[in-house]
Every structure is written in structure tokens, then in C-alpha cells.
Image (tube, rainbow, N blue to C red; front, top):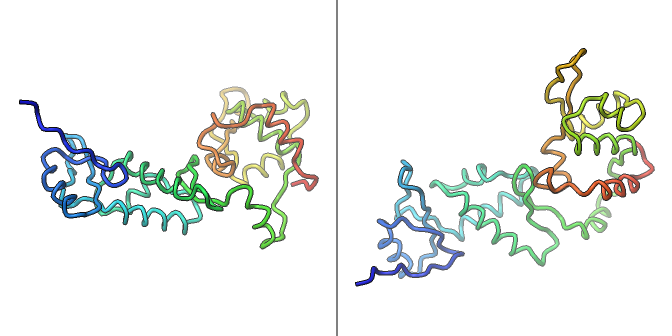
Length: 235
């Protein structure tokens, strides 16, 4: 006789149920309960019983509220702390993807950046939002942006490396400007005479560019055009 096949469960409501807890979880489904039981491997000491199944709809609301009201991106680990029971990363990411789809036709969007997940206004909305705050955002000089590009593409680099590439002296103020913006930081020193500082970019830069990793940086040619478009107001 063939073994019984577990019924197919809607992905939005159920991800996985521990085999030994399946019967009680199925009972909950039969009663119309919208649940999502969290699966763990057999070696885990924090197995979640079916009676502690997670209400996926409610948890998605909680994630949505947290992400809409925070100023900084929230990591998966931080979102997991919003639940009273342990959650699998895959489950959290699936709920977040459902939120992404929910806001597809909205003026805001849910993005994943280097530090986690966050809501932001869609780029095409920014010109309208700027009317609420007529103050100009800082615009950086070509020298600052060229230095940032060199660090981003060649990191880690020393001040001397930057000067060799640019062919001009790099002022301390340029590096201080980028450090104060939290876009670069000294991550160590090079083992050469004088022990020059080695500079690299920070997760904050990726967050501000709405990127997940350095691999998503635009091609060097595109970066060049971005530098050409940097404003006349110099910082």
C-alpha cells in the first residue's frame, strides 16, 4: 500500500509542519484557522509544537507596522524577535516577499538593502515629496565623488593609492567628508613604512544607494556619468 500523501498547503498560510505535529495542525486548518507552523531540524532544541503555530496574517501585519515606523532597515534577526516563537529565515523572507508584492502598485516600496529591509518612497515620487521640504540635500563635489568611487571599486585602499589613481593630492577634508557621512571607514593599516590607513566603504553607503552588496554597484562607466551629474553645490 502506498504511503499517505500530505495534503498541499497554501504557501501564503503554511510553510512547513513538523511531521509528528501534522495531525493537530491539520485539525486547525480544518477548523478554518489561518496558521503557519515553523519547521526546524531534528537536532534543534526549540521545536515548535503545532499548538504554538504562528498566525501568518498577524505576523505579517506586525512586520509591516515595524518596517513602516522605523527609520533604519530591520534585519531578519530583528524581525524574528517580533515573534513569540522561533521562526525560520525562509519563513520570514516569504512573508516579506508577500509585503513586497502587496505594495507593487503603491507609492512606496519594500526593499532589501545591506543592513536589512526597509520601506522607502519610490524614486518617481521624490520630486513630489521634495515640495514638503524645500531644503536642498547635500550635493558633493566631483573630487569627493571620485574619491568615493575609487574606494568603492578598489577597496581597501590608502590615501596614497587614491592619489596615484586620481593623479592629484587628496585633501584630508575629502576623506573627513566621506567619513562624517558614514560612507567610508578606516579598517586597518597597510604593513608598509608609515602604516597608512586602509579605507573601505560601509554598509551605510549601500543602504543609501539602496543596494544589497558591492556587487550591485553600477558599472564604472555608469559611475562616471553619475559623477558628471553631481551638482554644482560642493561639499
